[in-house]
Length: 562
Image (tube, rainbow, N blue to C red; front, side, top):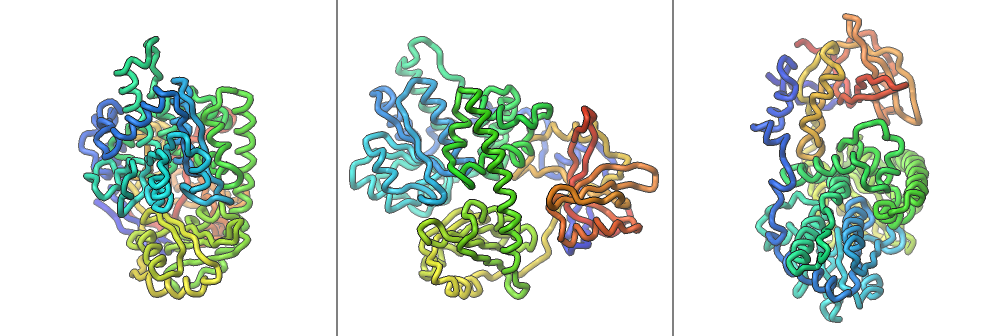
């Protein structure tokens, strides 16, 4: 039995499993289409990992890297400034350091250089074997420059691409001539597979004369972080990467990650820890300062340096949060009911924050959202987040054809572009004509309806066998019906904590994040006597060495009969 419920904030709840009258793991597995729970739980990297050479150009890439290592030629790793780019660079650096190979790395500044490859950065490393990670597939001008000037460059990337530049070595599951396998991998996953191939060939040529090969599984902590933070589907190999990577993180082998987890020493590390704790702090380096800081943290062998960097990242993350609140308030003023998209712009907004703001506005208003500011050169920089049914990367391509956008690209749900700010009116006119879809209320999915007295630490712990949760294996969500809200209070800057109670004397602590001054927040603070139904997630929290279950509220509806 399933339910369709319209909430008090005009969203549709799709409750898949009816009432929780059976084992919760069975309910979750059925809702996710998992037929063999044991096989799903026991997925391992070794069982599902393909031969790296299944990818076009992977063998050429591996051969070039191995030749450079054996000839003691410097290898320069060029990456991107997000978590996937930082992790991809760090995996390569740690491997090359471990085997004693000469290397360098470079990540562009979000503020001065922009995204991806640049000819000046390529020129700095023209005598090296250059490996571009998490970027480069669509850098046609730069790839042509490399080819025409006899520079050796390899691209390991996962962004969509329409054509392959002649003469380039590009490893990308989204190549138009690929067979379509493993398109769910992020760049760090592809880098790991490349290193597996390099390690295999080094073994075959007796490079490890002392027999001490690096343990490649130790790098899966960084692969897991990148996979979760890049929000790629946690299917098959990705699930194995994250599952094993979480175990490696738990072993505290990377002193940089361990230093960053100083506030989580007493908690189990889950995909949620990566998404909401590790990811934002690593991202803060590229958003607020230099992504180089994130690479140094992940690759350092100095505990003192690791602690210093982790504290700096904590400060940058707090600064990011303050900037985010300010820009969000200003950007919301551009929202118009008569438009089926949001386009907010201010030359002075912080370029490192606009992607977060676009996501927040998309989440709040269920519309494609575009946030534009100016970089240090006065060029308009936009970050976009979209909804199902609107491929924002396709919108950008059409904008380039119309001449209102200079360049850009990305994924269907998240992308970015550059523009001449003098053409902002032309852009708005183009968006009005181009973005066409039939608005519909956003849907929230829940796994089942669960009474308050059924919720326990044991129940939450039992769900963990299906970890890691994320894209493609969504976090379990539940509807708790017919409860009353009490003791509501504002905590932090804009969160609301409260207690949910039923008429049997059961109660549960709850919180609604970023809900102050929202319709949902107003409903919570009203503390209506009439029973309501709440949709959200469950987690185990602790206070004074005591564990308890906490409910994270996402939405509220009227009382329902079950």
